Image (cartoon, rainbow, N blue to C red; front, side):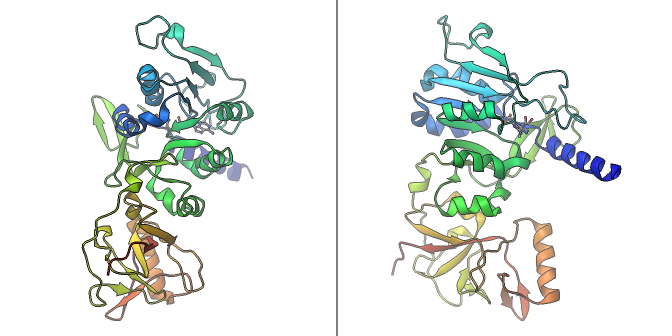
Length: 351
Ligand SMILES: C[S@@+](CC[C@H](N)C(=O)[O-])C[C@H]1O[C@@H](n2cnc3c(N)ncnc32)[C@H](O)[C@@H]1O
């Protein structure tokens, strides 16, 4: 019993430690510059952000007047539960409200920023943080990845506008994909190519490079939002023509497989399987999303877009033979399993 519970504690501690990486100011600036009009007059809430280190706080506080914000609220999480690895054991969870420059220097001075103690630990699900969610117009942050599903569900439940960072992988979560399909959530401006570089804790062993003495980790991340973007109204320019020779069909589902988004044929009206990077170019007026890999029975399936999982899945199918729920092709008698596929239909088919 003892070992089981300490294993569980260790697992949670490891998970919590993986949530500890911090967004660079340049990444925040590059994305948020596109939403200036939508921020005007709004109450912004960063609910997973230590105001002493968060670049989200920094960005909004220093651009408060330029963006003409109404209020900036920030809460910081004090991780009491997983104190095995927690850094600031003695500090309390804090909460902060900033309503703009008072002394005319257009800089957020310490006496203008009211840092108050929270009663609880600052968990985004706690009653006091939920009260702040209700007050806010737009939630902007990089939330803990291990709680991403729950985090997004809470925003949807409270019908809030949001702009958050998440792992690309989250697209294949059933709950998140459903929201994408229903046009309740989409990708921000940042391209899907490459990952984002985040600061890690100074003592972390999990990093990819050191720049100016700070450790950075590359994580395959994108922005998720439900704030309108110009990008999702732009048509993807299609130049390829369909022919049965050029495009393979799945063996167990009536759709063609297109492994490069740019090669979606302009004149094909049926279902098309495309990589999840398609969502970087998705305009709901041009395409309809049918599902995330669908079998004949209509059951949703998907392969995570990582080599390890993909290889495992391919081997599994070759060994056991395909079953309902697999999406695959047969090339020269060999089972060929695509990476995760989003199934779409072109709404503007050209003859
Ligand atoms: C990926 S980090 C990002 C931090 C900051 N938003 C940034 O981008 O620099 C996620 C943050 O959420 C905090 N966190 C973890 N669990 C939380 C919870 N239940 N409620 C609120 N914050 C939480 C972590 O301590 C961590 O600082």
